[in-house]
Image 1 (cartoon, helix red, strand yellow):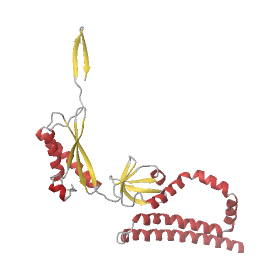
Image 2 (cartoon, helix red, strand yellow):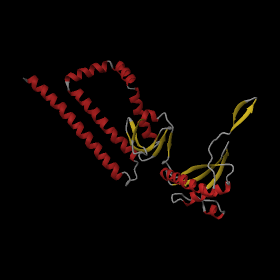
Image 3 (cartoon, one colour):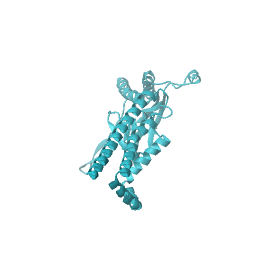
Amino acid sequence: MLLIMEEYHLLFRVLITLVVAVVLSTSVRWLMKVFITRYAKKVAADATSFSFLKNSAGFIIYTAAFIYIVLHVPSLKSIGAALFAGAGILAAIIGFAAQKAFSNIVGGIFILMFRPFRVGDTIYIGALYKGIVEEITLRHIVIRNYEHRRIIIPNGIISEETIVNSSIGDEKIKKHIEFSIGYDSDIDQAIAIIREEAESHSLTLDKRTDEDKKRGVNKVAIRVISLGEYFILLRAYVWAANTDDAFAIQCDMNYSVKKRFDAVGVEIPFPYRNVIVKKEHGCIVETKS
């Protein structure tokens, strides 16, 4: 009877430990989320550290609960002793099986230490992923792309990729907006149209100094980048407050410049071939150029 009571007591202790761990983890994460959303900006604190700690809190609490249960349940204590005796072999097995998991954890710690990006930054990861960082955890980061979808990327992958951060330091961007025109088109007229559309856009920033304005420097610079096989490439250097504004300017200019080019006869060329038909010795021969 006494043995049964002890078993019930141990079971009750395990259940209480698990309940406390769940309640404590949920409460801590909720409190940290409230603090991050309400007070991080007010105290000018970086939300990245708080987000990382919030997502690490559950892992720490559940690990502590597991260790407590192992130490206070006799049957599990003997198993723990046996595991400790074979710790070297166990560590090798776990290390081999959990290489990716450990790589992600180490990557998350490095992100927290070196801060290549923060929560709220707009980043490119490699050539595939672009979006706003929403969350950083021990295992992965979550970014929201421009289709309002969440992309979950393991930290181990991030450590091997090139990261372009559009928000760190200064969000302003000098956007390169390019247009091709034909060799028969009036290049001065094309440049004037592109400059007018760029400078008149409401989102275009004026980065000129007072001295530049006195010297008559244009608000938007236009350069002839190359003379291609069948086109002349023009590039406008347009300053914008951030990547979203820069994208909006580019889209609007693609529309407005095309309309004005059509109206004045400036050609936007495309590749084409000339087919020459010759008659040689009674046969028809086609040559292409």
